[in-house]
Length: 636
Image (cartoon, rainbow, N blue to C red; front, side, top):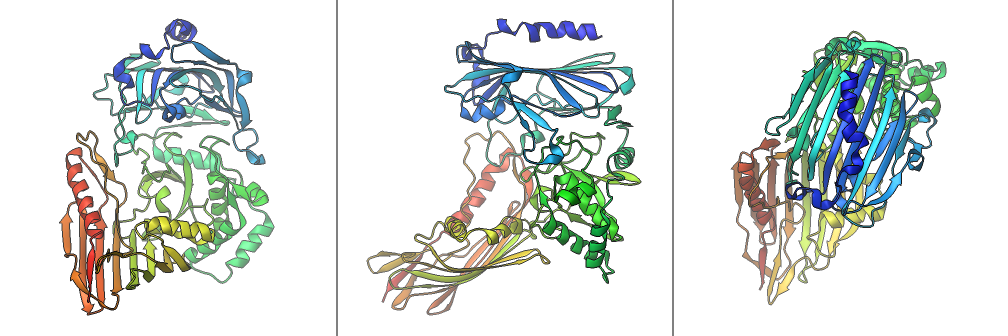
């Protein structure tokens, strides 16, 4: 079988000099709407036995403009377990002429986590190239070998929006010791993907897939793009053999071989944390004290998934150096909780704010579906408490948008299971504004307001408290860009970490908020609660759209009118209700000199077909138009 694979690869890997890399050789259908074209991608994974995996990889990418530079991807990680045997690259101009050749020694070799001794053997080789003209083409190849066979790379024949694929091939050959492979193909329909199956051998091939242009509010491309997940039934990782049979047995294996025994702490630290929690009986109150201790005494370093391995740095080491990646800090927090009698579970998750990626409950796999680690604390008869252990500012029990509302892999001493993180509802993601404003006869504005944010809205604003004054002022000037000449007179903030509620109190002024036209003043009475987002218009929408997280806004603003003026024109009340949400705004004359503006906006979370995009856009358009309605005052 290995001879067969070698024969298949020879024309592609050894005879690439005969291929035409000029831009003119790319079919027009593949350049249309593309920033880059993957001319060839060929990955061969060879697992001759359970303790060896070899990868041979080739990728040829033509970059059409600077937006496509990130699609080159000419880099490779290595460490004590994975070795790069060969690596090279060749750069060609638009005519297919060779510009530059990179040998292994020409690649930049740096620490993957510079300056941190815990990860000193994790390194990356990458090609440094600054294009001087477009298009250009990069031919990149490498060969690697590893003793670990736990993780097989997934196959994505489409790389991203606005990247087309001329040819993508994924081959894998494997020995009997692996027990075979488990596989799951998603979204293959309609792409003409070819499959070749033989004994201990699989091949998948995709050809001529045009670029899909990104459209505003479109779901992450992984929701709809073809994807192949593979995993060996039997694997080897860092001295231990395991199997990918089911989540329960995999969780037990991971706990026993990767987590167990790494929770030892120095005696002095155990004494300290016990002293801090002395007299506290409630386990959640104990956990709050531990969480606060971790936030005040450690710092997080960002480490890409796979660097440093999947085994967390021991709690002893983290306690010593006072830093760690997500694995290390989560394990350290777990160890401290254990020291005061609080059980917590180690949880693997795919973390990304703009993409709530689930771990597939029907595809048990050692790794490949997650990139981050968090904790949960089980409670009898209640939902667990979730902890993000990498943040020095996140409130206890709050995950924010990085890991909310997705299926995750919970690992405990006697189990492994798929569970879901908390979802913050439309109504929980709430911002409330109370304001009082005055307008002078010259059109000047003075105002005081309090804004309270909760849920994901809290996550989006609480950081402002620790910014520099100038940065805070710049933020508000951008936030309320409709107020020309806005000046921030005073600011104060209250970050209530127990209620997970952030309050902003501001005093502002603007000299020319209202505009004069003869004996009339024109102004927008909805001063601080204008939602200006209107989705982009498409004549022929091709993709579905998604509101990833819903939210609610409420406001009550009292406007004091200038002396010597009377109301000539008041905006009409507006009320809208539909499947996407609701909107209400009203204007009430409190007395001859005051107007109260009451407003409520609800945007619902949801995924919708492309046919409903125009209706959603129209809804948001009506909201924006109403929010910016004008009040007309006439001088007496």
